[in-house]
Amino acid sequence: MSARVGVGGIFIECNHFTAQFADRAAFERSEWLAGDALLAKDTGVIGGMLSVLRDAGCEPVPLFYASACPSGAVEAEAFDELKNELLECLADAGELGGVLLCLHGAGAAVNAPDLEGDLAGAVRDKAGEAMPIVCTLDLHAHVTFEMLEHMDALLAWETYPHEDAFETGERGARALIEILAGRLKPVMAMAKVPVLVSAIHGQTKPPGPFADVMQEAKRLEGERSLFSVNPILVHPYLNMPNMGGGVLVVTNDDESGAVSLAKRLAKRYWDKRVELQPETISPSDAVRRGKLVEDGPVLLVETADCCGGGATGDSVHTLRTLLSEAPEQSAIVPVVDPAAAQEAHSAGLGQVIRLRLGHQLDPQWGQPVKVEGVVTRLSDGAFIYRGGIWDGRAGDMGRTAVVAVGPIQIVISSNATYDWMTEQYDLLDLSPADFKYVVAKNPMNYQQAYAGVMKAAYVLDTPGPTPANTNALPYTAMSSGWFPAEPEHNIAEPEVLVSRRRNLRTTP
Ligand SMILES: [Zn+2]
View 1 (cartoon, rainbow, N blue to C red):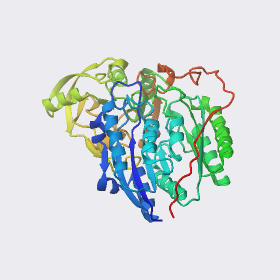
View 2 (view 1 turned 180 degrees about the vertical axis):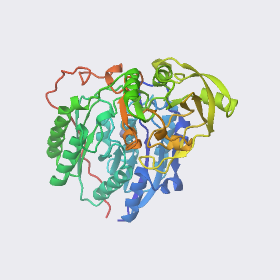
View 3 (view 1 turned 90 degrees about the vertical axis):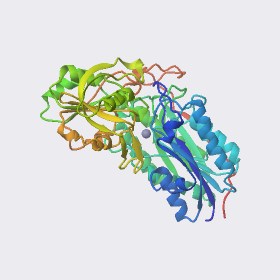
View 4 (view 1 turned 60 degrees about the vertical axis):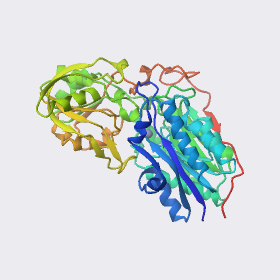
């Protein structure tokens, strides 16, 4: 097949409850790729897309691709620039057979709350009704009607922790090739149920409630030759109407089959809602229980301040508890605070400094804590991810310092970064296995990062924009009840969104 296929996208997960917005610099710090730089990508979704296209004899045509660490909504000006960049590349790409996009699905811009829906509409306008467009999403997508309306096939990642970005890129490219060959006439149905739970129990490796839905989806996909069956656990930190998780099905020209299967599996997901809801304890209780655990590390999971879910990473709730209730125990605590990092760098290694630390970027969730400690490490904060969605890509904590308050090592960085394994601590030569307590600010990846090392883990109930229990958040956009806000709320049946059928162009 000799089709020319445009490849690009804008990838970010956003949070409507956090104070920090994403500007252009947030993308430039992460990935801002066009031309040969985009074509050189051999990891992640884009890498997977390119590899399948080349193997099939297609010519990948670089459009524009940018990604950023999760954060608040994208600033209006930045979104306009990103979108225009993509649309201009599309306009300049010459004759294309199809388009492949890598999106997240839970992006939001100040001027386009449904970032992906807006972008999908704009790309469709430019590309025309006959252009096959296939798009990949995170399984934490907020799938909207606009996405189904404007895209021909949506395929989501199938692992959490996320390990299959490359494979999903491959699946996306294969779907497009099938459409171009005239063998696939995609019809999509997304069945949704109003479940807004954190990702704590969202692992896809069994056992687990979401893993159960995933296993059933994959079993049916194999049995019935459906094109794709993707369970979705919506990123719950958007304040948008009609939020929910469920199942996204792509069939070959079978609308009623897509609708009935999506509904049936979404019902199964609904039935798991209570199991999906995590239990939490206070930092004080966790520290107290941790003292009874022989040895360490004991993981204190402060998931409400998850940079990977759009939080600023500047909470000091758990740090405050450790300072007051376990000051004699060794601990690692990450805090994003650019002003404090700068102060530590100005003071220099070995110096004693006093800091007012935390809750400066997002003051709504707590008060700064006063600490006096010794600067034990200084770094430019640049590291490389090993594995996961950002595999091989640079991470950038910015100016970073470690300040020791007794045996408590506070890792103070300037930029929020996504946690995959322990790359940030490896850079600073801190070995979590040597510590009694480690504060992990994510809902899931700590389980793989500290597998075989951690002696216990406690999910904490602290204030923040990515809490374990979403009842802590002031949602205003939902029009009817949802779990867990109304634990007794019931539904007659899942709501179903269906895609539009098009006469798509094929490539001989
Ligand atoms: Zn995700």
